[in-house]
Image 1: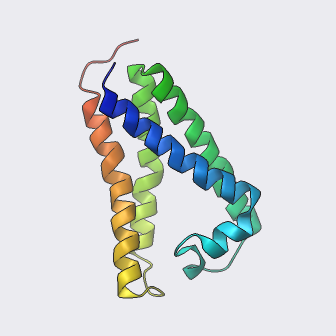
Image 2: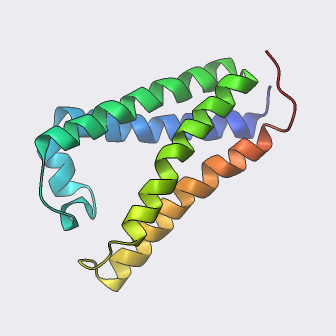
Length: 132
């Protein structure tokens, strides 16, 4: 598989997960306090923040391997794993907007919707055939 748009999308998703993962793992309080909207769903939990960070780094590893090898199954597994997180994440947050201003609710929902639509579109780019 040699689709440059697919590879770029995988690298983008991996970069996002590394950024989230590093901050949430190494500076969980900063992640909670400074990442937009996170503090609107209290209470703060260092344990939860560090777990989210570690899981984000794990997902980043899968996406990096997929982007590096571009092996069809690995790409699909990486994108599927991302969607297994992104879809319930979007559903939860759209159901819990009570502490948000209208602008913040719209912005967060748009970003989380893109986080579902992008990997879904990339998955579509993998086509129907499966190689090794």
